[in-house]
Length: 206
Image 1: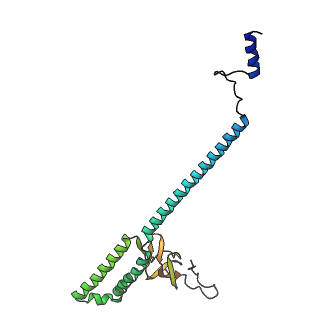
Image 2: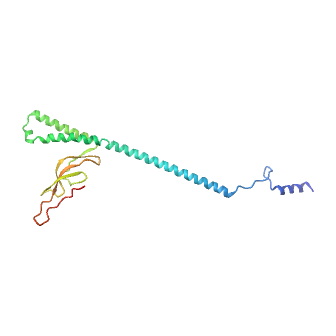
Image 3: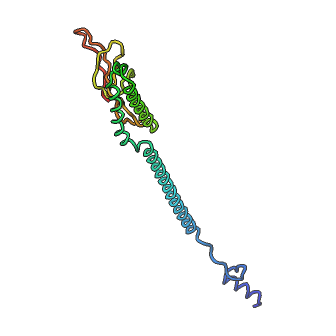
């Protein structure tokens, strides 16, 4: 047998050789590769979902902190403001207690004292306003149960029923939050003649 025939038989027994002269290895199993790739894709999707959830939670925490910070800046002084209202009430009572005719006949010292009290009241109200605390003085306005507290109803021939015709105590609000309702008297329709069912009542409930 020639050398050429022996080489041919060796190649048939050992299979085709690679570039390095060694027998070629079998190709990787395609199914195993697909499964590994699918596992990697699933793991990547799970990690991406966790990342998005973490980012969303971080954003929610940031927004809550910002909202709490804004509310603290806007409403954090509510308790103090409620206590200061007593001072404003007392200044107003002191001014209302002095009849106008007495003031007209008063000497310069009393006039100066009253002017000082008036200036103090104005300055106090200005300070409250600078801190977003506004007065509620709704005389002539429609009764609003969210900001007004009806103390009585009174028949009124000129004002429409449900109109605030008297303010017993001024109310206050901090921004859009009620600090103290205005205590008011509300107009109602005059009583009807006997047998007509009486005058129209106003709903003063909140």
